[in-house]
Amino acid sequence: MPALDTMRRRLSVSDDHLEALRAVSNGESAGVDAATREELSTAGLLTADGEIHPLVADLALAMSRPLIELFVESASDRGQVTAHVVVGGDETIWYTDPWPGRDETVYTRDALPQLIWVLARLVGFRRSTPPPVSRPVAASFSTVGSLMAAFAAASEHTEWEDVRTVAIATLDDILGSMETDQREMWLAVLATLQATWRVTCVWGPDSRAHARGLAVWDCGPGGFWVRTTPAEPLHPEDIAADPDATFVPTSGGDLWQALSDLLPAKGELEAGAAASGALV
Image (cartoon, rainbow, N blue to C red; front, top):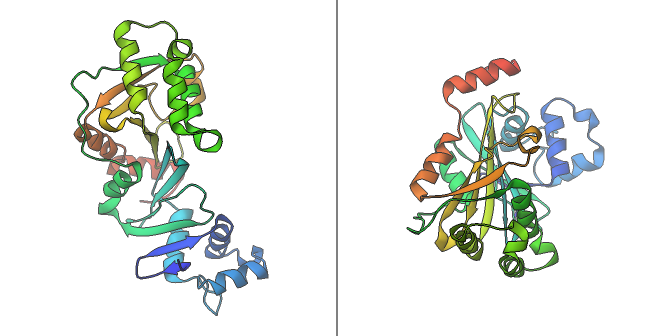
C-alpha cells in the first residue's frame, strides 16, 4: 500500500513520521532531522519545496486541534487494538482501523455524517437481540478486571478458547459463591464471549465534564452486554472501593442509540471549547 493514497483518501504513516508531520504543520520544521525529511519526501508526504501535501496537512491539523476525539479499545482472539477517530474543525473525520502486529497506522478521511457508521464498523456492530432468558450479571470490578485481563492477554500467551475453558471450569473460584441463576447466566455469557470493546469520546479539557464512554461485551449469539456500573469513563476514584461491575443484555437498536449518545451536542461542544480557550 502506498504511503499516500489520494483516491481512497488514506494515509499510511508510522507514529514517528506523524509526529514529524505535526511539527512541520505547526511551523517547527527545524526540529525535524534531514533523514526524516528525506523519508517523508520519498513517501510523497512532503513536496519538493518541503511543504506538506494538502491531504497530509488536513490530518496534521485535525490531530493537532481536534474538535472531538474517540478512542476505541477492543480485545478478541485476534489480539488487542486501539482505534483513533478525530473530528476536525472543518467537520471531516480521520480514523484508524488497526490490526494487531501492524507497525504502520493507516488513517482514512471521511465526512462527519459517516461518524456513527465508522464507529459501528470499528466495534463490529450488527443487528442483535439478546436471548429471552438473558438477565444482568454482576461481580466485583477487580474480579472482572482480572478475568478480562486474562482474555486480553490470550493472543500473547495462549488461545482465547483456552482462557474461556479455564474460566468456565474455575468459575466458582474466580467469582465466589453465587445464586444459581447468576451462576448459570455467567456461564452462558463466558461461553459465548467473543470480544470486548470500549469507546471513549472527549471534546474538552475536563475528563469528567467533557467526556462520555461505553463498555461492551460482544457475546456473539448471546448478544451485546453493556457495562452499566461503574459508569464510563472510569477514573481511579471510581473504582477505589471495588464496586460491582454490572453487565446488562442490550439489543442492537439500543446499542446503536448508546453509540449516538456518546457524541456531544452543539452546546456541549461550545462549553468544551470555551473551557479550553478555543472557538467552535
